[in-house]
Length: 160
Image: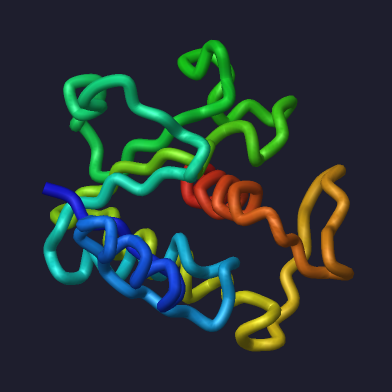
């Protein structure tokens, strides 16, 4: 069974009219939506498969998940066994947040709550985030690419 999260009331109404099981999850801005949605659903004890709207399944994706970790994400690397977390690659290439499978049991809920709390949106709270390395910040000092910010967050944890 699955539920589609709608981020606004018109979308929720349209989905429900089409017979889609829908959960309304309104947030003050889209930047934090993915992360707060993940943390909220995990907090009620449900595993989550979250993906961007440009992903299409031609079959059941679950047989292709390794299910050997609390959090499974795609990567932009052709050879992740060799290139994952190597400094010559940009942080946004290591973990592609367009496809995330998170388990409600284990460390994923705490990890995602820590990330969401540590990276508030500029629009929601006035916080300012920067980038590191050669990446150019977006929106002034605020980096609007959550995939890069999540990659940097994970890199710091891996390097500890």
